[in-house]
Image (cartoon, rainbow, N blue to C red; front, side):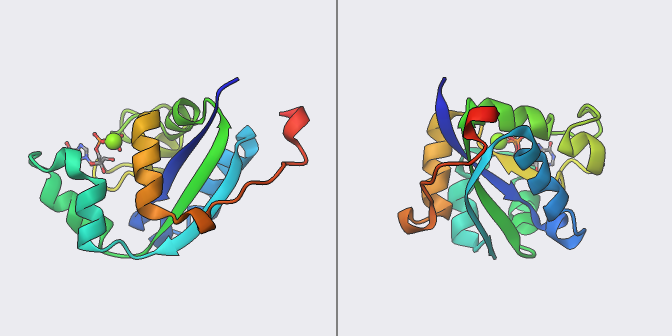
Length: 149
Ligand code: IDP
Ligand code: MG
């Protein structure tokens, strides 16, 4: 067992399209535990820190415009191997190529507006969680279903 915490963002398209509840359900149904959740508007400063690795990419300007355009819902998710499990539930970056049964595969069509972000490694998860959540916004608690998932 390797209990990890990872960051998920329900991006502006997910909020605008009313898909946040269904997206959160995917993670809950899998047996992952919510340990933080909040709505926020991403400032240009936060967006540039979060997406620093993409600063040279041709899509960087569109990406920053998109993520700051409208509120998001940030989730902190905990569970065994949570970083990889969350990425698998999301599907690959391009929703047109993401498998059915994944969030992007089932709900998306647009490469920029692909509904969700998930940290791509444990190191990214730790860095990104610290960007979006204060330590007093993350919760340590025993899940009642813990022994059954
Ligand atoms: P990921 O979200 O699956 O980790 P990344 O390569 O880290 O994918 O890219 C970050 C985000 O940038 C993607 O989720 C998507 O919104 C956007 N993006 C990635 N590649 C492209 C592209 O080629 N064109 C437009 N937007 C892109
Ligand atoms: Mg990424």
